[in-house]
Amino acid sequence: MASERSDGHVPLAVKILIAGGFGVGKTTLVSAVSEIRPLQTEEVLTNVGLGIDDTHGVEGKRTTTVAMDFGRISINQDIVLYLFGTPGQDRFWFLWDELALGALGAVVLADTRRLDDCFPSVDYFERRNTPFLVAVNCFDGVQKHSATQIAKALDLDPDVPVVLCDARDRRSVKDVLIALVEHVMTLKEVAA
Image 1 (cartoon, rainbow, N blue to C red):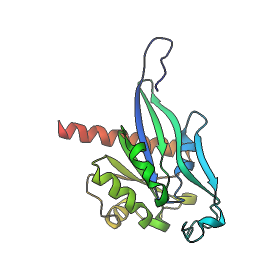
Image 2 (image 1 turned 90 degrees about the vertical axis):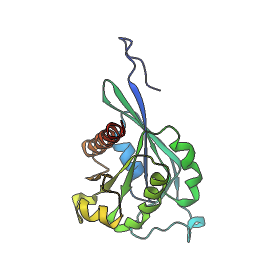
Image 3 (image 1 turned 30 degrees about the vertical axis):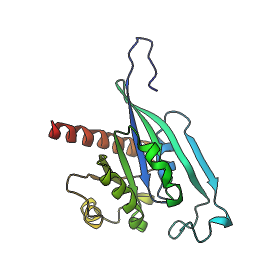
């Protein structure tokens, strides 16, 4: 919940989902921007997941989110974003409906090395008419594809923004979140 300041002002609390495929950087994104110590439900990958967890392209990944990540960031004195990172593996998708309740919008984090992993997230938000944008995690500062190329590859509607980011960089992540809030506000203005 948004906390009351000493002057009695209570900022608007906004729920945002951070979604995407396994190993795309959702936990990293929430951790990079949260002004509180983020809640994480990371567990070590074990041999039980062999054949279930596709680690192609993320062979160094040793942990996975099994429920959610949670963080908070104040955009300004009037808006506080509560970030809910979804689990990326399909065996945990049953949690998404609960996490999505009341969300203003979503960030679909994409890794161009495994772009097809974000299709389920895009489909999920399209089916539910939840505003979203696609944030391409440019690992090691390398932008391999333009936003236009990525939008075309994902067959996104023309009004869905594609932004480039570094999920490890607080400023970059904050820019993504601001872009999402602006996108949602634009959609609301068009609908009015």
